[in-house]
Image (cartoon, rainbow, N blue to C red; front, top):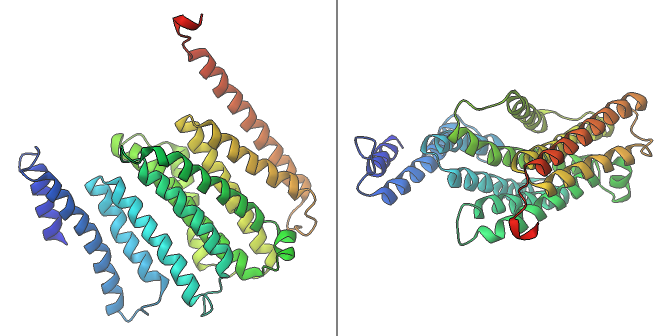
Length: 316
């Protein structure tokens, strides 16, 4: 692994930090080093008698790849690694879902397909010849993912669809994986260009994403009501992330879809009498403050855009 990384960096950047003699070969060797690092951590886990089917091995693999993707500054490697992780999770659920890791295949597989489509949209945006497909893939993945997430966090809907508690847990894990992919895809380019430009909001968002992902992997939900509450929090974080990315990238559709998903969740919660974990008045008070604040923020962004819009001379 170290030899591949060192030789790849030498061929790509040269000894004095300039362009090497074979930059493309060097980039290929550095990509190989990232895969070797993940595989090495996976094999080390097996030497300590970790079950070959344990999900912790795949987590070790992705932990090995992500830091090296930062080092070689390759967003393509990072997105491909996340796609492979999601595809592995879908395959693992379909084969071993009935053995000790309670997941219903349908909700997890449906959400994973949406997440893969969204990640493919991010990946195709990196290349000139495929950039035209980025917006449709990314948009469809977000819209359908939000719809399915909304469906699985409302308990009466899951009861009508005959989905039990493992179905919600599987959807929860898939949604947290998609939230990680979305955050990493939006966060990595800014970090590579501005190493010190990380805001407190980004740090808090990534902290919540990490805690949610670990909870989805480790927590055994004691009841359906707790699972419903936890998945509702995850869905709220997902809509917030979509709106956050839309505001930062000036993508109006993301802002509107995220706001629509959050608003629909608040309205349907009003008639969901099965959800009684805490006082509804407190929930609607906080939700109302959040929605009013979001509307004020959107109006501020709209006014700023109108103030900075330059009208061409031909249209005056």
